[in-house]
Length: 103
Image (cartoon, rainbow, N blue to C red):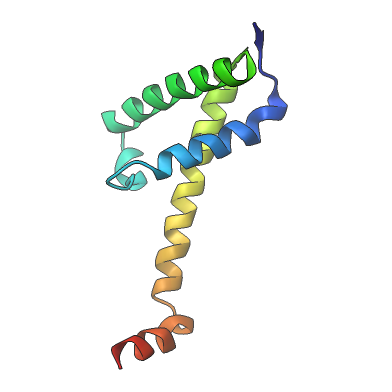
């Protein structure tokens, strides 16, 4: 069984992103980055799940560096998505939608 190379980083990141988005309630990254056990637990669970998926689907073992980079890139993407969502939700561009919905 080979070790997966760096060209799979985007694939692993995307896969982890989809898995993180399934977490209910939604992941609060601001709380997690303050050193909570939730981040460690989520990392361990998703790392094991991703490794098992890649072994089963592609017959390769994910490199720990790839896993670490992919996980934190995925977490950053979720964080940025949440920031953009909040920013767009409270912007003047969406005021007309709020007005329309109130009618």
